[in-house]
Image (cartoon, rainbow, N blue to C red; front, side):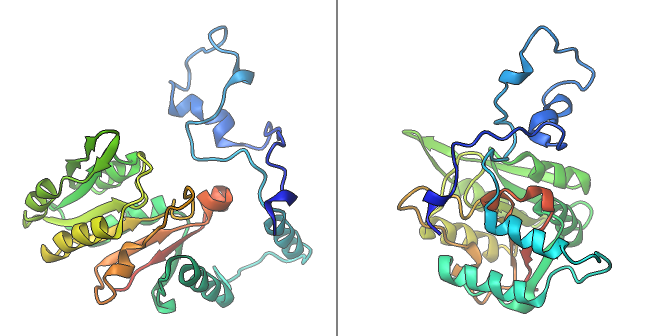
Length: 266
């Protein structure tokens, strides 16, 4: 459908909807008990602290939900209709040239809950997790939650562009206690869309040192014109050590549905 059919200039009142972007900042950015009266006009706040769009959800999605709700029963249901797995697979084929195996697809309540569980399943006490920094805060939180050691490799900025410090990554990945790398593609917070060359080099370093890779690819469909996204797993089709995390939440503003696609080949 043409974007001409969508109202991108529509202002929607979210009061009374328990919207995290509207009221959640109080306990996240400030002390929940802090008195903000007189300091700021709350009505003038622009909620850019959380990845939540102010655009209405596509009517096709709303209509599909309404149709389901016309049936009076919402009892025990399978997490996802088998048809969904085929749709997800076809989406990956059409957009990224990647064909994930249907049997590898696991559904989760979100990338963050999946990340917390995966780190705990993969790592043993005393082991280390490597991340690229600056990083989405929950990478660190997931490591801390599982009482593991965090190892950071800082990005290098050259003329406003960010690059991975591969020598530093290679050195830290060589530590035998470092067993997992948590990676973000495209990168959060810089917005960098990693090239195939960069992904290949990082993947080779991690796999050569027997690191499992969790690739958070939740922003994969939010691309500027002429940018192309490559799933890391697509570059290593024979490896079973790359876990891919995707979700419709960022692309379609569906975070409240608490649903994610986790591709686990092992």
